[in-house]
Figure 1 (spheres, helix red, strand yellow):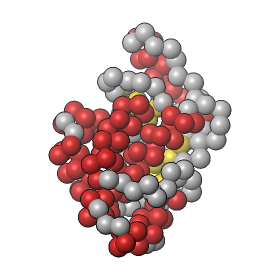
Figure 2: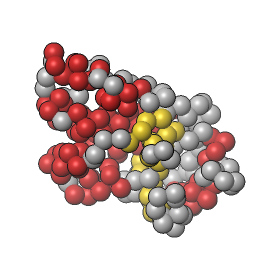
Figure 3: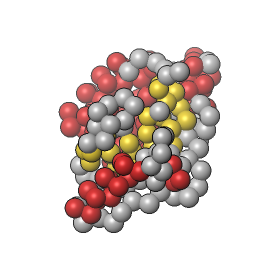
Figure 4: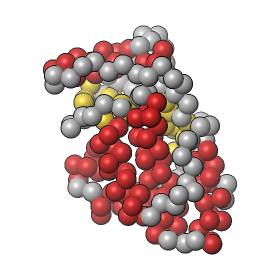
Length: 187
């Protein structure tokens, strides 16, 4: 068990059965229409992203507070659905999720910009896994490859591997959402 960040397949986005996101999809489309934007349609490719939130987030939140405004920190840490649509301000929907009473939808372009700033601040190494299929990023940090790299090439990223993990996780989630046109959520 645990909490994962996962990509949502197009068929699940519009599914109104258990595990489907139809209520969120229709609520988001209504709000996008109010903002003068077209409805969101996920890409048809596979969602293919799954990473587990394992380490504590305290260092990541502290890093956000140093390098981001409080509004930016709230945006980055407060979403529970990420879509590849530019949203100057997150969308709040009265749709319960497995973890909260409402849904907060953020735009992947905005989350990407924030996490790129954090990645630059910690000098995230180029060796950090990029595709993040089937827990690749989680295992890279937890099974020792990150620690081995830190031993031979230390830097700001290696001072707190838990923090570096979350920088990489949110960076890769935003990149994946934009690359594949799929929503991301917690599962």
